[in-house]
Length: 410
Image 1 (spheres, rainbow, N blue to C red):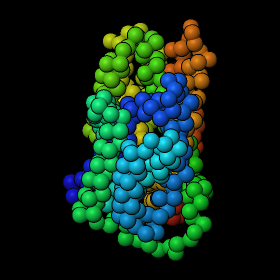
Image 2: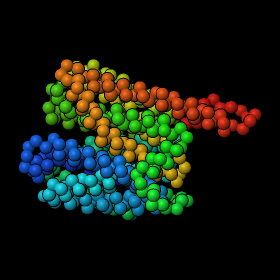
Image 3: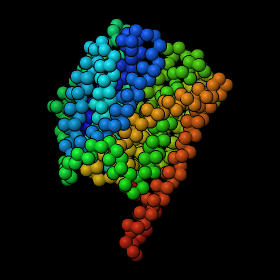
Image 4: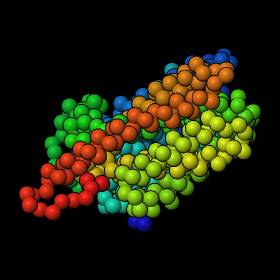
């Protein structure tokens, strides 16, 4: 594996650790600054503002990296994050803390740039594998971050912020000394209008047939918000989990998910192709959701995780499939749009999942997983439409009298 790729993977992993570090101490810090115990609303706003800023700025950073290169945009975002986490760790003002959280969402939008960097240096046939490894690094970092944040946060609610600043500083130095520029094509002139966060989405939607794949991508991440939002409260209510058990199951799920993305994505996409790997993953994840609705104890939940984690290969496989639909000088716009859509699900997904769960209580709370898995039904007509469109485009591209092809290109 080449050095730039290792640096990107390490950057993604350390970035995820920095995000996860502060999660365990956010409620305590908000109580410290507000002087009140009931901080549900403030905690919700604190989480939502991060996702909102990612939704706005992911496509913008992607566009900037298309014009000015991946390296400078990535380095500036890392340096800004290091400074921002330091300020949040030092402040005693609630307004400044929220402003810092908004800036963290902006700098955290650099995932679009990292993904574009991988597309730049990777052949199309290898992208699913490398996206799987990248998502695995993010997953492992997001598992390690809360564990470390909970440990050092026992002594001060400020410590995780300082640690997050250090991690971003380390990744900045790695980028300075070890990360070359990957984007060689700057064919288009810079236009200020491209900084409108809606413009990249409009560009992507104009591409033939890509809207259907974006629908599938959006639905997959929306379904993913159900366990992300409900795992803790559902486990406590249904299985009697305490804090330790919640931590163990989350860590186990995170590790299994990372292993699945790192080691199953490549062989499954090679065997079935990216399209059918996505279909297999959706079936596995949907099955896992239905089984979770039927689970009656912790012992029955653990094997269900295997289905949910197999579903994790859908994201890198679909990322690879989508990356083939655009030119190399449009990868930043595409990846920024994808991260923006992910952020959109992080805003509305938890609100929808928790509201559905509230409606189904007290007697039918387990049906929330059926509702989540049922959202995948939307994917099938969208995916079928894309396959038909791809087949029609492939047939139209064959010269008159030439041999046909058996299936549309992946």
